[in-house]
Length: 233
Ligand code: HEC
Ligand code: HEC
Image (cartoon, rainbow, N blue to C red; front, side):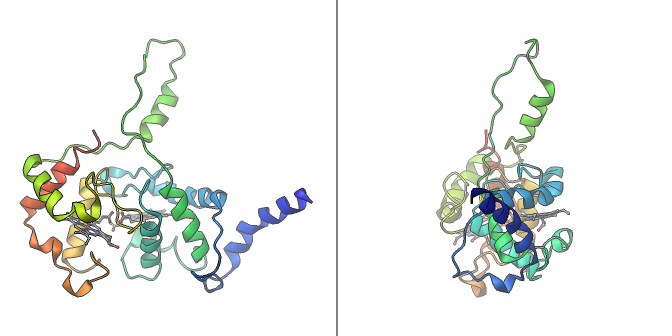
């Protein structure tokens, strides 16, 4: 009996790969499949890194720890071509990425926790394993310090952004707000441009009144990003 169940669950990823996304509606009972999530993440890893740590200085954003609802929403936007992403479009069409798979990979990546510091190591220790150390260093969340007035940035950030993005910049999982600390500064700047040009919508609940990021000068945003870049230390 057990082996039958195993054989059947082994088939699930295959089957779900074949079903059309319309077969899965949000109100259907959804059962998280971590193995499928991990498997799909191998595709994402080519750009975003195996641990969702991002890469190429923010050309690929960090994904680890983003709220799963935020990740899923962005994948839907990419798939529906409502948020342009040339790099990803071929990976997220309906055939390759039905809703169930979006939900699984989003939850898997959301659950990855990156450390902010490596534990101390002694390179002269005979057991020191340089390769293991290298792998570990790739799982670190460390954003290079950005230039700007950190104190001014902190004040502005806490007043204008923290209510949604969190006091520590770590986002809000319940409300699907992404973290802005631990994210590449270059990436944040690119997104600011997109919101200002209305390529992305910052506040989906009030898209008509979506001027928030246009209300700040580049210098003010630079100060806020400088502050955010200190939060992973
Ligand atoms: C070929 C490279 C590539 C692959 C493969 C890829 N991505 Fe991306 N992804 C990108 C790029 C580039 C961006 C940034 C686009 C931008 O600047 O707006 C991005 C952005 C994202 C974002 C938005 C993050 C944010 O904070 O705004 C999410 C979520 C995401 N990718 C998830 C995934 C998942 C999940 C997979 C695997 C199913 C995946 N990506 C595969 C290149 C890739
Ligand atoms: C009313 C709540 C709210 C406030 C206030 C707010 N944000 Fe956001 N922010 C969001 C939401 C929700 C998203 C995700 C929107 C989407 O789907 O693109 C977001 C996304 C972002 C992103 C893109 C991050 C990514 O990973 O793609 C940046 C950058 C950002 N906000 C900066 C700011 C800054 C800077 C401030 C303060 C000046 C601010 N936000 C204030 C709700 C808010």
